[in-house]
Length: 182
Image (cartoon, rainbow, N blue to C red):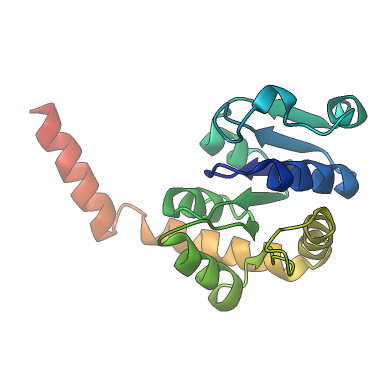
């Protein structure tokens, strides 16, 4: 299953391309669509979209991202590449499709795609749009190349080993929690 979280306001064209890209993938998906993600959410979906994907797509206004990413059926995560989202994906060994929109998200995308090799960037066309075909192609590439999942699992293990009880981050957090309890 694909899990999607984009923290950005999309214009109507971007929103429709994302929806139609998900439809083209012909895979199950969960799409958390906040009411402020597009100019008019009620009319934002392409005509007939919800009926066509209803048996395999779930659109909701909110989902518990951490719990969703922990579920074994999640195959990839389309993300804006905010650091918290990246860490949640990494801690679960989930490959990423990257759609950054501002600030550090572009640097995070670079690490995801070029250094860690646990995901793919969604490229814009000449009109500066991420097209439905681009979304479909990158989903297929990400899910058909086991390298991305394998690399994500290696990073998951490294992350887990870093925060084990002997790690300084764990000890600092534990000390802080004890201090708060006093």
